[in-house]
Image 1: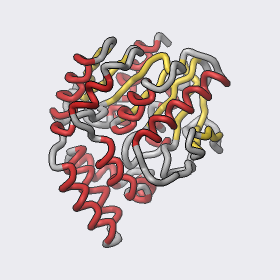
Image 2: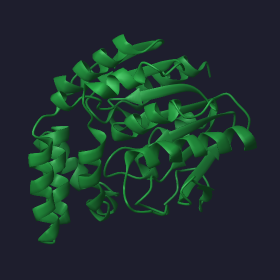
Image 3: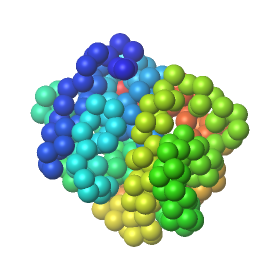
Image 4: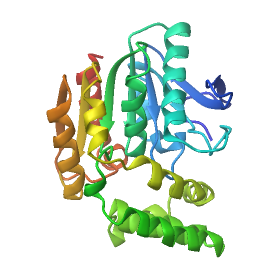
Length: 273
């Protein structure tokens, strides 16, 4: 499945460890790399992707372990950061700059790490990217529960427990998610939830690490999201050399679906497109 108006088949960028990362390209203009969050793939951008492609060359990736991308064990979030950096460098070489990278949730964590690895990235946008362990709590207990569910052949339950207990979706949001056209793809990627839950939610040291991010960083937070996302974003904004924060009133963890116009405006105001 491609983004509406985009290529029907992906191109591939080879990461430093040899993993092939699928990239789906659409639009024209300065490059904007889109990095999805946990459980998702490039199709999570199906609503805002075409809007962003009116002013940018949109490059939506399938992160390793899902969709058309490969996977190379053992898993480490550092490899994901290298993937994003490699795609940004490829975009700069083939399209030109400046290159902006945008990450949702766990993808935002990958984007921040990539910003430390390459000068190809000019700007970063992070939508509710978790950065502190104390914001989420009971991480290992939840991961252990998901291990058991996966071993019992219950990937849909893995997905549901994660969405309800970590993302804190409401019953209404879960019902809408479960009836979406991409739900079965999310179930197929459920096995990646556990490794990301264990690897991606860092301690306070992550914020200290990101003090070294020199690119301008825009964080977007939903005004109706769980308070943990706002707290983590505020702490990161205070630490960043050039950080700014935009709140989309009434939105939660999926403003790129529920509030697409305001989401796109926040991004394009930041990129200048």
